Image (tube, rainbow, N blue to C red):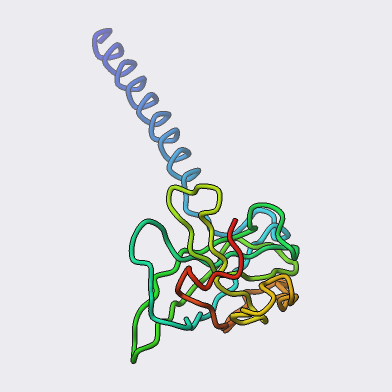
Length: 174
C-alpha cells in the first residue's frame, strides 16, 4: 500500500511539473505574438510615395545607386529623415522609378532625387532633381525652393516629379 502511495505522490509531482512547464511555455509563446497594433498610437509613422520620371537616357549602371530622400528642412544640412533606393526602368524610351519613403512622422518634407556613389565619398552624392523644381538647371537647386509635402496622420501618395538621370547634369554635388 505504501508503495502505491509513493507512486501516486511521484505521479502527482510529475503532473504538477508538467503543468507548470506547459504554463511557462504558453506564456512565452503568447508574449511573442505578432501584435502589429502600436502600443502608442501617437508614434505612428507614414510614407511618401510616387513616381520619378527621368530626363535623359545616360543611366549610371554601376558603382552606386539612385535614391530619393526626404528632408524636414530646405536647404538640407544633414542626413535625410527618410530615403528610398530606386531602380529606374526604361519603358518607351523613358526611364521611370517608383519610390516609397517609409518611417516618416507627421511634418513637412522636401524631396530630392540623387545618385550616390557606394561606398559614399565626399563629392559622391549627385542631386539630380527636387520635387517642385524639376530639373532646375539654371541656378541649381538653391535658386528654387522645392514644394514641401505635408504628412499629417496618413500616407501621402502620387508625389511625382521629374529628375535628371545623368550625373553630368547634377544640380549640386556633395
